[in-house]
Length: 504
Image 1: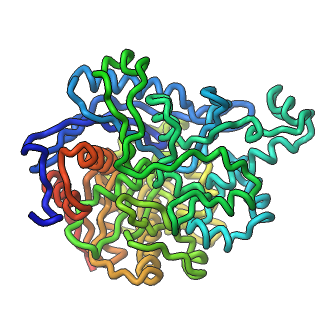
Image 2: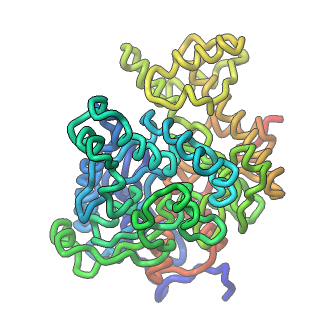
Image 3: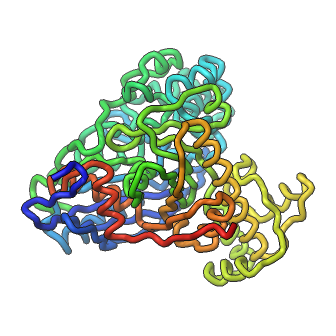
């Protein structure tokens, strides 16, 4: 039997639980896996709504964890025999711990405090040197810049501090990092609360800017140059390894069997999503389309040339030692934020109707820069898009349908540009584009992407992240075996993609 064959444990089927946390919503899924296919069963879905307080925008991480526990309780009730749990989430954000106590709710990456950390970081280590070591594209909210902002917060005058805690730190000349034992990224934090084990899963660690893309270890030299305490960064763990067993208190709370393990997967949600791309060869590109769009190719080695840095391409860790060479492109958050704005103003249009109206538009609409920083923050998205168009001499959309069409045309255009650059910079030939995630359900976006790239688009599966999470757990538990090609073949058999052919 070749390494491309998927083999089941005694030919049977097993079940695992996937916790998949996105930037706007979370879910708990049961995954049934065997040698002939995968089946997902949704157990719980819940919103992930940030909270703004006097000091900025935060994740409501305790509510998120409560929802995770409730979801796992229901998962165990339905399937007492689950053999593993794993967690994935968005990247870059973190919690600071002193002992077992969290020092405040994690900041949201869209909080504008991160901007001050960029200049402070580059004063110590230039952007070119950062890129050579980490291979990470410049984004002002990368973990490395957020940590610099933690330092700067303590340098304000005590009377200018936003709250009593910050005022006390400023008076003592301390910042949050001086009080911290451990930094845990979001999926690592949830795993810590489940198991009591402090670990940093490598695919998510690779998004911090403090991870060596060449050695897949923490970049101790860079951490020292940035004057960050080395003890903040816990031991690394690779996808497929066991993080630990559920704590007795968690076991009792969710009604789980004793000894239920928590497995490390590609805990950066994009790493799990890319694992679940139903590709049948190596000549593919992927777009993981959701709140953000992650657009790129899979490589065996990083590309850290001056050209790739200038093009703002990133090298993030993938499963089985692969590299995700990609660009972060703004995603369907532009559309969802626009819909929220219209609803606040009293106009509610079902998304299906809005997309149907957008598809019916036959006249040209404005194509704007979907990645412009002015579009990052929450708020009145249509007003900012209109202002961008006016500033750049383009006719601004007027109706919700025109805005929706303009957003989707702009995203498809950004995808086409990114994919052309990815091919040139990496030398990889791309003949097929796979769109996975929520955006794969948007037929108009998929067709526009095919039209603008001139390449066929294969759309689906929608729940790619959860599928990737489940697949890796199943392989780690011996329910299946095989390399990436084998796992992807199983996805393709279980979730056949929808094909979109370029119109020209």
